[in-house]
Image 1: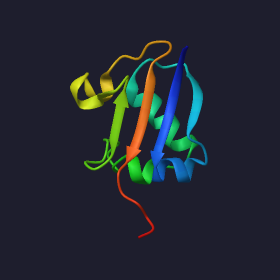
Image 2: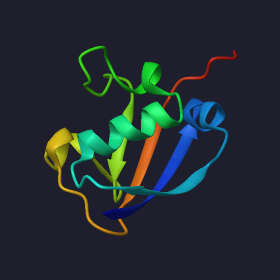
Image 3: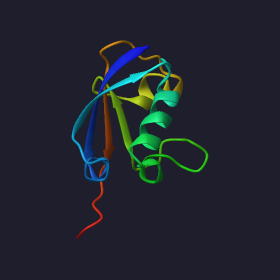
Amino acid sequence: MVRLIVKFMSIARQRAGTANVEFFSTSDRLGDVLKELVDRYKIADIMLSEEGDVRPWARVLVNGRSQQFIGGLNAELHDGDRIALIYPYTENF
């Protein structure tokens, strides 16, 4: 089991109803953890495509580094890692 610190930003924060959470997962793979997170906080539609990939305009950072540069959704997570979920656009103009 891994203990992660998750930070929601922009619309993800508004929709999740919180800025930060401590999150526990039995998986150590980013893709599995991300699926758990977006389902629990009901933000799958803004973060993931129908195929389960990170949407082109959404950002997932692990310890400040973009997921695409650390192994993508197959990246291995470790206890204490920090995940940031960022959706850079706003719903209210």
